[in-house]
Amino acid sequence: MPLRLVDSTFSSENDTSRTRELILLRLAIRLAGIGIVESDLTQKRTRFSPELCDLLRLPRGTEVPYEKAWEFVHEGDRARLRAIVDAAAKAAEQWSAMGRMVRADGSRLWTSMCGTWISSGTLMGWKATYAIAVVVDVTHIREKDEALRESEYRLRLALEAAQMGTFEADINGAEAIIDAQEARLLGLPDGTRTVSREELRKRVPLSDVVASDLKEERLTQLREAYHHEFRLSMPDGSERWISARADVRRSRIFGVSYDITERKHLEKRARELTEKLVRIQEEERQKISQELHDSTAQHLAAVSLLLMNLRPRKLSQERRRAWDDCEASLQEALKELRSFSYLMHPPALEQNSFGSTVRHYIDGFCNRTGIRVDLRVNQRVDKLPTDALRMLLRLIQEGLSNIYRHSGAIHALIHLRQVGNQLHVVIKDNGRGSEGIEKGASFRPGRGIAGMVARVKHYEGRFCINVSPRGTTVHASIPMKFESPSDELMPPIVQAEENAAREKCATEEIRHLLSNIECEIRLSRRQKRLTYRCTNGAAVS
Image (cartoon, rainbow, N blue to C red):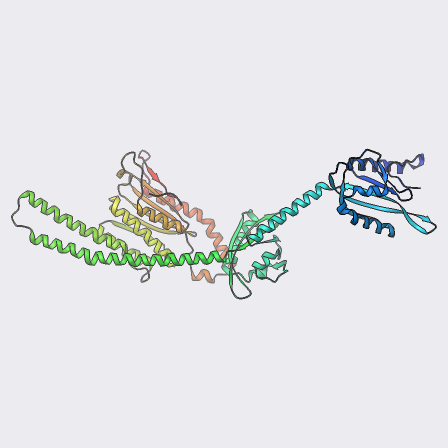
């Protein structure tokens, strides 16, 4: 007798337990929208449950011939599904498959099917004569799965086009899972999908490893975005620059990396060209300075002597005043020419230390201009690269040149101090300041200030000017890497702890430095203060 899950009822009062289970089963089927199909091969008929009729948009109670029922299976999946069902019938086994079905209105849906065959005894032996299957609509799951695969495919195309590799790892894991592109970036054999973090660290310079560890610690503890550029030794002995970005999701680190070797080479080439241009400019300034001092200044001195010889002994008061003014103007022009020639080319840094070079330069500036300059220089400044020292010297030169030309000051202060990894340069004078600016007029920095801003911007620093009735203060804050033999020999753990300690007290030191500067330029509350600030990228006329 066929087993019918849809219509079977139990009239026995003693079987209340099975009746309760059947009622619960029917409720679950209706609630989940699970369709049931029953096929009787002895009668060649197939019957659909009400839920399946609703799913296929058929009238409830639909019953069709067995072969007709297969027409509701999409023709692209029909042969495959029928082969699975027939094989299960011969082996009297359960079967399951996923395929598309066609509704009565022609629309399609994805379904997951699972069924079983019931065998009956015949003269030829046991034979599958009855089939029961459940059908579940999984169209929404399939669409989401296809959308996810499509998104993954697009992401993969984008990563391959950008030559980016991906990696993921547990926060405390010893290995990272990588894709094929990441394996190529790291120089690993094709097919490598895991890499030991310890083995990878051995191929990275120590300084890059220490910096990466500090950034990874902030990533895992503070959830700060991780971005690090590091050098990587390749198996063939070459070196490659890698840029990596990462973030934490659910206690796992996910990230991408890409090759920036070409960019680093271009940056190095640009720095070399810049240094070459600076050297050419220095040589040209030296030639002009020497020509002004040795030739033009000598001609003016000769003219001054000739005027003294040509001056008549007997002159009227008016003509005597004219001769005196002419000689005074000539002496002033000679003095300015010598001062400008000295300002154009300071002493060479290659011959002396930065401190002695700046002091020698300032001594010459004071002797030629009559302006007293106090200098305070941190001794660690001498450990900076030559190009950075040249930039600092140019800042001081431009600052003193502006003081000499525009401020009318008699006293100036130059202060260079290291706070953490920042170098603060302060140039202050007691000149006219805002009193020299007409009422209602704005402060317009000239080409000298524009040059100072450009130099500071090149080193990713900050630049500001404070103009008050009691003088002008120039403040530049520049990130610098101070090289020290002791630092190079320092163990990584100790070096990392010292760096963390420096960063911790950097804020307090900066506040202390700026408060000292403010004490020097503080005015009465009744006095009006004009402040002009230039930041990176600001337009300077």
